[in-house]
Length: 532
Image 1: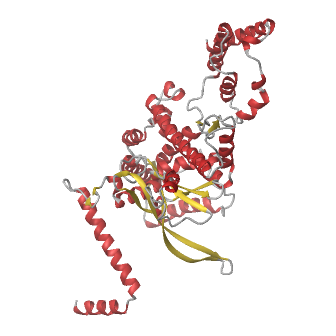
Image 2: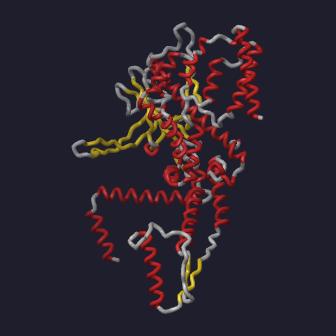
Image 3: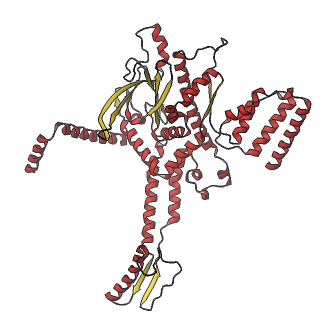
């Protein structure tokens, strides 16, 4: 023992200081994590800090562990991945669409939407799918916005949640972020060396995107910085940079994975099914047992015979050998040999019911029914296979509303930047207050029954014609019909129809109106026949 201590002291004296520092930080982190873990597992303990009692989502150790587990199971577990994929598909489908009434506002948003950098982040359908996957797996999004300080044009990107070390909030409102501290690695590619060099860790502070709202006030009151842009470390003469946070499953500063509650059950289910696969493999390892009368030589001959057949099966070196033996062959034996098939009871029936219990826990935590989560028709019925469960439908609608708010806020920010940088005035050319509204639309969650839908459209048109009054404009009505038939470019189709130049139905000649009414009657009668 004395010799060991002496060697350890000698090694420690010759160890570089940098290594000592890393070792001390490692040990302290291990002690800290084990201590916090014990505190969290013991009843009656609450972690305190200068800001008060932290919630579970604000515990950095818990959150980082949940983030790592969520990412792992997203890539490695079919049930967890399917839950995320279903929400993504039903939320975005073919992607969102938008429309603005004011032509100038529409031009500003269209320029933002068509920007190549923004297409990779927000505009293209694949980018929208990635946003959905990110918020579900990570629990939070940190988009960053680069604003051209000369013309107000906005570009956007995404910052990884691991890089956000601290969210500085308003001293009087903990829910109001002011700054985001980002600790990230910067590196440059050396073309001569053929690799990245000059890797360095950098700490930056990004102001929240609500800060631009105070810039106009700062001109009137110099020196005042209510939300703080003076401490930003990422601004340049040409570009102003802002960040914002969207989070789910949280009431604190940080977000946690959307399905944080099911992670333990995903782990249990995955391990259980892996064990079941092991049992099945073990049962299939030996299919027959053979008793042989005789000594070691007889046993050796039998082993040699069976072994050569197995060897030929894989190598194909034997005469007339095949890739695998043919089925339905006859095994010939004499009374000195007795071949019997081995029987195993793997309790697969009970295991299936156990697995269902675990899957139901995952289904409950993801708001996705078991038939949809597993794709198992044996646990569903005709109603569950052809319609959508009510609570599950509301869950998908909630996700659509979440991202509708997300895109609406982004468009509002883009418009606000255009106004601040004088690209867009508050009034239109006629002096009226400009309509800054941008409508965001998502694809329908449940596909309409086409005959039933067309019957409803026919009834609506008939009612409008009879009353001599339009309840829905021709343009919006045509939009519904085009979407029902799966038209991708609705705007182009509407332009081709030229609905803006079409006269009102009630203003058409009587002969034309009669023809339309007869056509509508045929449509309605045909739709009722199909439905019947």
